[in-house]
Length: 222
Image: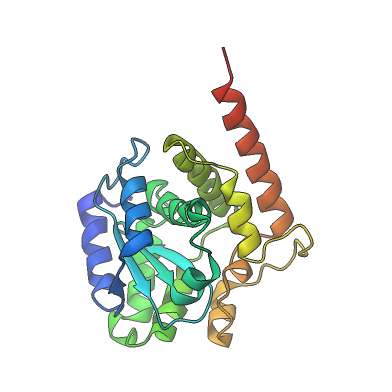
């Protein structure tokens, strides 16, 4: 059975208390709050919390149940401040996982809490190893991409920024579509780069181009 928003929030708060992350500020907080106020955000409107793991060198972003979004220092440094819409898309993608119900899969979340145990999350590496077990399917990742494009568009920003975001994350057209590996195995190996825990480059970029084209067609429809 799915969790209610209040139940999901309590789970997220308990996990967040063990993450040892810093509250986001500056551009991340500004962009996050902007998206959290969008009419498309209905599960936790204006209740999202944004965190930074400044010492984490891996290029990654993730969300946990209850509306908590994390950005690693590696990802923050990868994205230039001259293209805030690219970072906006990444934040929107993680919000999408929450809003679309991917994070609140009650059975999976409770199983993860039982297996990992909150006490084992004393380090960023330990936390990421645990969070890797909350892996999303390729369909869910593609759904989160499409949601992010719609969310960015709803704020009158450029949904095509998602393509630039994927490029900054290493998901270029030249990357083999079969680069996806099991997230749990990748995390154990310490190779938690974003593009290794998400669907292949070709499919993501192709689906995102289709969504951007649909949004632009909608915009110019009489």
